[in-house]
Image: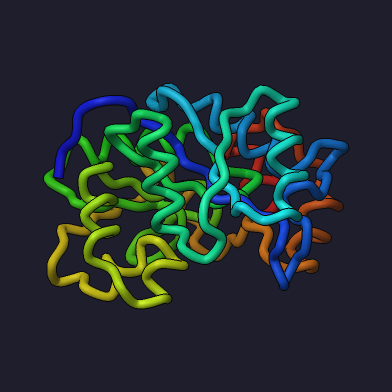
Length: 228
């Protein structure tokens, strides 16, 4: 499903994670994780902008204030209905194409996002991804997911199960036969590392990242070398 208009990365972020509380504001090398994500997305040439979508809870006001101080576009929406929150964020950002990014991927790589957008545009896909090694050879945590705003809004009208509202693209996977789903492998042999897990979901993930000599501007080759 092709789309026209802006290509916007919508970053799903929150402070109320039960597995790793406050993770978006935990610091790696003196920089909050959400700042890592925003800074690394800024290197993606196919993006026209980003929007951080946070829950509308008293706790997450702290995250909103941080983002506003940094000048990072942000909004608050329903805590449990993430699908509705994403639709609100897409409308606010005037997105035509939505690139979904999880804020627990501090090492997201602009090059992977660019390749994903190009792959989506070159095919007749409804949804494409390279953020997880499912039917591809990408490391876990460098990439993203992409779909049109039109499809996102269609999902909002169709998805009724709580799991499909809280996990905003679950409807696609639950009904995979209805959609053209695409993924692809990295071009470089050294980047074909589906064994690498680079996201930050639990305390041990944070510790693993915190002790490595990483920097916000490092490229994928340096990341693979450090963690490989």
